[in-house]
Image (cartoon, rainbow, N blue to C red; front, side, top):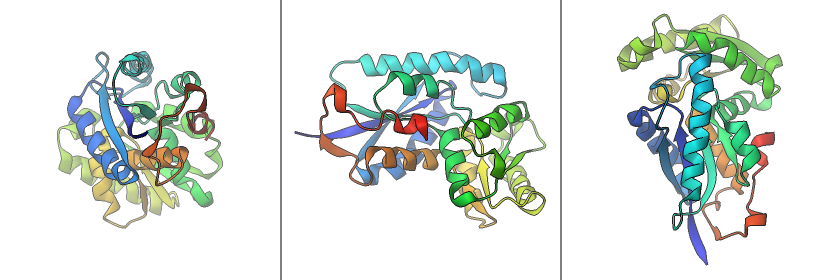
Length: 248
């Protein structure tokens, strides 16, 4: 029997508007592969992840909301999970627990940006996460090609309230990544920055790596390509790709 399968996108902050925005972006990439997208928002924690403490705090809430969803009976089968914060809170724990792909938008962005040996940088609005992002690059073995993290001038909460200021400041940061650091690709490092990342890609300054689309493509690859969304229901011991995302 054939089933349409579902990818969970979990937002590690409590902002439901951000969840909806990221779900729609993921859906535009996953729906053509026959995959439905369901958004989950953590019930507790920060409304914006801006420092290592809030990143660490969000991890347990991510685990909790995913476990609850997977335990619900008579729901569409879940075939993959996207952790939609750039620091990938709880991705490794969930990947170890689950026999389905668990992809982080930070993980996917780094692998995409470094593809083909490109030099790549990150542009973001969260200065206190600079070290966390640098460590994430190292965890995925891409430090040799990494040009570093560059930051906007304004506080992330200020930029969250002004889409135009966010766009202008990130555009300036992208230019610095290219002109001063020699980056051949630039990750716009933040799930809530996804709409601005799309605008920046249209400038054609450099290869802009958008985290949510990158994660969506990694999910499709992990599930076996364009026909990922239609399959017979697998037995518990044969669900595909559970270690693919964790080892990438």
